[in-house]
Length: 182
Ligand SMILES: Nc1ccn([C@H]2C[C@H](O)[C@@H](COP(=O)(O)OP(=O)(O)OP(=O)(O)O)O2)c(=O)n1
Image (cartoon, rainbow, N blue to C red):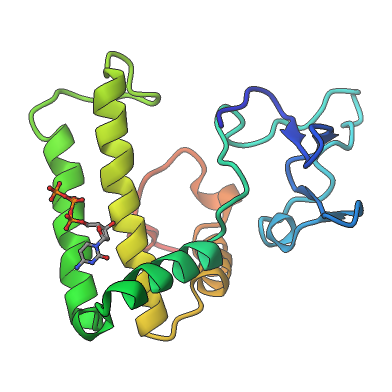
């Protein structure tokens, strides 16, 4: 679901701050993710009365399925087919890389492609969605079979990225951290 602006909708369609979650028991909480992102209260007005700009506010995902949901659904899919025997880490890695290749095929002979894929047909977008899903499914299963708790690993890695690339130092520059002299 694509959404414009700084609003996210809860289970009953009410407006939530993007870092808030509406639980089935009706309570609302600010996510761990928001604090890991260094977000404070994103709806707090600035001194001059304007709201702080929310990064990446032109598109967002639906909340479900979670990564754990995807792990479980794929585990059921493979169990039902007795395919676990074929899904060892090396197999899954190669399968994932193959699917990354299929994503690449969709881009390889085009010129520069800009955000939102202007000019792409619905069928091309569907094809891309399928291939990206294949990559994600194999990535999640690879992490599972390697006993990597992927959501937690992502939180830790993003915290490390923030330390390595302080915004105050690198804003507007695409240089690798090793290229900074200090
Ligand atoms: N041994 C397999 C085969 C398939 N799948 C699942 C995971 C992927 O989401 C998808 C991959 O299916 P295909 O290998 O048929 O690849 P594509 O769907 O990309 O088909 P094609 O290669 O024709 O584009 O199916 C799986 O888990 N294990």
